[in-house]
Length: 199
Image 1 (cartoon, rainbow, N blue to C red):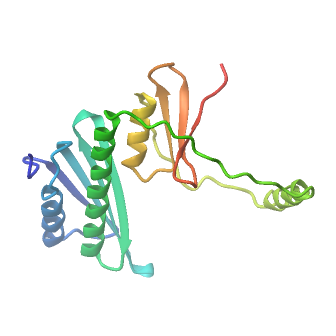
Image 2 (cartoon, one colour; image 1 turned 90 degrees about the horizontal axis):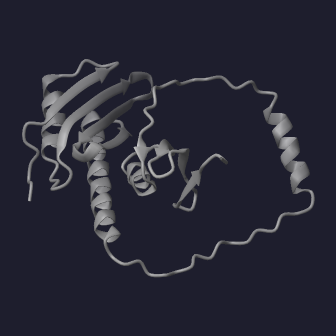
Image 3 (spheres, helix red, strand yellow; image 1 turned 135 degrees about the horizontal axis):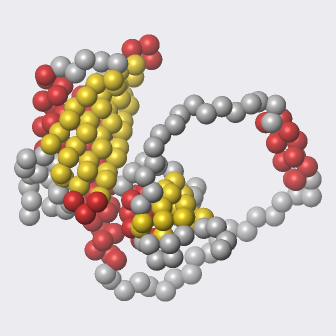
């Protein structure tokens, strides 16, 4: 069993803060101390952000691992060291969950049927929805954040694993089986939804 990730390239950068040697050493030590036997961490990126006006200390970590696995997590507290610890805990939990899922994948599935709750709406529910929509249209939406997004070919199972390892609400990928551009998203009940265009 791998106890420590040796020779990991760790980049610790600051956003709105100058990273001290003590902070850099602490973050690096915590990443190297992750007790993972799978997957092997190849590179780690740690971004430390301090928002003085709101007294927010944010630690964000992205781990690039073997087998094209990327793990992301971030935490926000009033102390940078606490934020780093909390982020490491989130990553460790995600890895345990991922490993359990891999082990469970090889076991036979039990045939169970999930019951979906029924909902009955009042006759005027659509009218209320229309009124709310008209009120919302008075505000003009603006783009507040833009980022580059890499679309990868994945099978549905791989897409679900990627979602479980990140904090994103959706994942855009090219279905490796059909070649169709698909969107996987988190549902409120904890399951996942899949959107595929009609061919």
